[in-house]
Image (cartoon, rainbow, N blue to C red; front, side, top):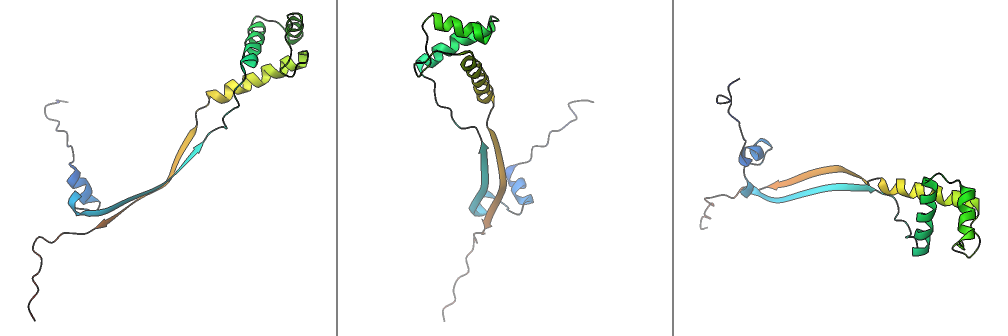
Length: 138
């Protein structure tokens, strides 16, 4: 097909509004837009302390290298690391920390869902009369 014969029709704004019952921009005196926005997001998490971040980085690095939770627990106890509450870090604590860390990463990777609903546009149309009627004297 020859591109020279194809004419692109770009409707002007005046015709778009006329098709919807409003004949021009000047004739619209009141335009209202009503809508409802629903944003679904997860609650913001409590930030970890510097010590918790340090422990989690050590634990995840060792776990990625193939260490099991018992080996990681013994290693941290030998190095003198304690839990945030000052107690020895047990194997079950390591497992729990890894699980919660994985859940936290998955939750933070999700984007919030935005839903826009109940959209309505209302216009009040008044025409300005170019030749106002003259009042006849009584």
